Image (cartoon, rainbow, N blue to C red):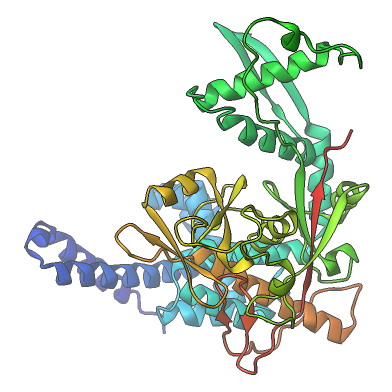
Length: 489
């Protein structure tokens, strides 16, 4: 039997808590922290109850008995609640009815109401049936990570289940592309929409020209970008010099111009072998700097591109796969081309410093070449952006090897910087691998919507190669392919 007086008592308890809010300043540090934990747990539980009430309100249309035609209208009138907020609670309540294990986890205080919102997005994107089957796989991630990490996992699942949506987005982007320059005040306002390929090239070009072009270049990055654009436009109107004629700036008796760095607009695509073969359940390829892409755009980018195969999980000797082939020791100070490709693929094309998403990498010896007599080996090379590289040489960011082919990052105080994003990403990859494995076993190529079995024990994460190592010592053999793409003419 429903007992409405329970909610009345809850309101009275909340009033009591508010009445003593002026005493918060008397709390000790321990009491303050514990009070916030207790309050957050209570709010998450109550959010779940509120969501269930909203879902029931919509199902029974009880709002119409009070003269409101919609749930949102009733909530606006009676609760002073906006349209988006009331819809969110209604959808969350429907999700709790659809996913009983998520409901149990919320009631037990294992996940927050914000996690339920992400499961709601998953039901909308991936489908209720698949999300029901994947509760056992996604809930361990939700219990340990923040809602944003759960969103990453669900988005990757959506990329696999609904891979055709990436191609539709690619087509929509091609239809929307445009760029305009409108006179505005003292200059021009540039705006527009670029397709993924052109946008990725332009983004990479901006990163390149934002860096100093020569020693002593003290211009701000904004000036460098605009000056670089101006030179690029000038180049369109300047005919190439004849074979027997020097460029005008070389013929001048004035001091020759300082050497400038050539802007790099090459693109980088990371794709599994299964993706290139278009096997069902394969993880979508990634255009570095943009994100996942569909098979149609991948086919366009790989047409005429330079491709390099990189084995990221293998059985070669040494702690790091292929290290005995790619390591050059003290024979070369600079990282070789093969090493640069391997490091870029290992880090998915982004800076290795946790929390940094820059894609313009410089290759650093963790044990320095001069100071520590470091070697140019894979387990001593890491790709970091220019800003993080400066922090390293200012001793504000410290990188150490972990003895297992990986690295740890520390603040100047010695505190380690946790790499939640990479660990979460590896968990998502393990999840995708299990789904792909299940799809291969069922042989259902036309309908890649698998039922995932009970997950195995959580793997240990190798920080360097992020190789999942299960208790029986096996790892999923996957061959990743790196495509270093030259600009299309």
